[in-house]
Each structure stands twice: as C-alpha cells, then as structure tokens.
Length: 146
Image 1 (cartoon, rainbow, N blue to C red):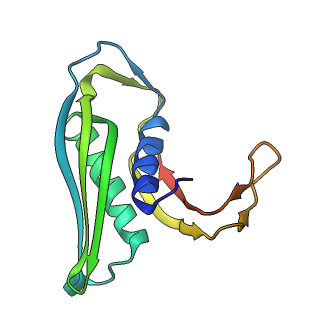
Image 2: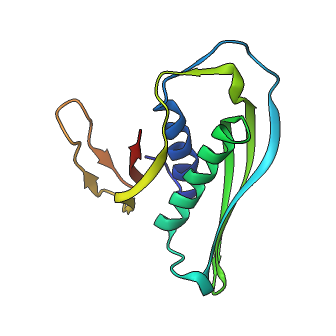
C-alpha cells in the first residue's frame, strides 16, 4: 500500500527483491542511475497494470543480468496518446554481493492487481494475520514465478 501510484510501483519492486530473501555478504558502494520501462500505444495496451509488469521485469533484469540490486527508487510515470512511460532514479548496490535464498524467475500477469482505494474505502486482509487497508491509497498484488 502506498499513497501514490508512483510509490506503489517503487514498493512493489522492493517487494519482489525482498521475496528472494537476500542477505548482503559484502557491502558495496551505493551507486545511482536511471532505469526505465515503456509501453508503446502502437504495440497494444498501455494500462498502468501492464506498466507495473514492465517495471518489475526491468528490476529483475537489472538484478539478474546487470548485477544491480535496487535499494530505493524515485518513480515518475507519464501517460499520453503515445503510451505509458516510467522513469526512476534508482540507488543500487552490486547484486553479486547479495546471497539469495530464492531466485525469482519472473513476475506473472496472473491475478495481477493494481488498484486505487478511495478515501474511506476498505480492502480486507486475506486472513486474520493481514490487516485491512483503508484508503486513500494505492494497492498492488503480483504473483512471482520462482
């Protein structure tokens, strides 16, 4: 849950990485860079849920292929008739310094949820251990392929 759609994108990315149960073995120098995800209107849908999938795929790509483990992200989203774009200023460390308990292979579009809760709207928790979410807020839920 996050107060803005941009913040929920950043939190979802951190959640994907946290699902790998990382343990930092050798702290490395924090670096900064710009990462992006785009959906072109000429190639199909440009919904925010698909942009979320593209962004999470980018975060996994950076970790697994470029050895960049995201620590934080300042996300900016734009949408127009040409498509949807996400640009993020990211702080990261070397992924080679992270020992993972689980490897996430992909983010699934199955049961993907990206939802804005209006003021006072409640989303019940899935079980008694999970609290209800009360708006205004954004909420995302994704399934991971491990």
